[in-house]
Length: 230
Image 1 (cartoon, rainbow, N blue to C red):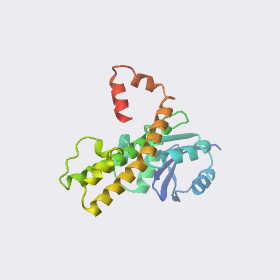
Image 2: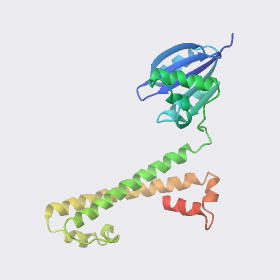
Image 3: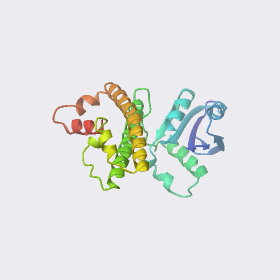
Image 4: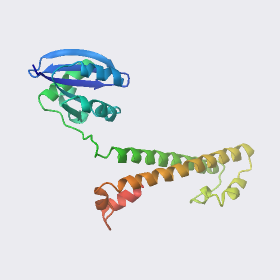
């Protein structure tokens, strides 16, 4: 007999709490799984019937989505901010898994899009570029901090320039401070090529998305926002 099963998963880095319900809302099973592909697939393949699975958007959501998609009839990655039932009653992993299964059974989950034609690659490249930019900014701030700590004015960007670097280093008369500044310059030099490569990859990927045309229209707010980002 083909029986529908609704599976709620409360996902953590090391373990996943699982609750399985039938179409009438009866709790059929609860268990705790290791967050490992083989263990999860073995559990799913051991269940009979038509399987529907849900779990919340999080760090492992993309990986788990791709792992489970071929093995279940319905898969919903849901928005945790819209799961009101998750905030009611007991707050623990088993209760969260049961609540997710119930939300899925009663069609109350709000899906977050995951798919082949989504923006996952663009999002990851954006995060990579943003992180590298933040790292570069921290280093440049530290370089200026070295000069300011010795009452050396350093407004503008020439303090970072390779062409003027020897002039700036000559202003640091204390050997230890000068060596510290040299190390910071080396760090900045190593970050910049990687950051520029990440920028090129981000721009290349963005060309695949129709929204880029809207964002780059002349005099549009999107254009200003995009070029501020990149």
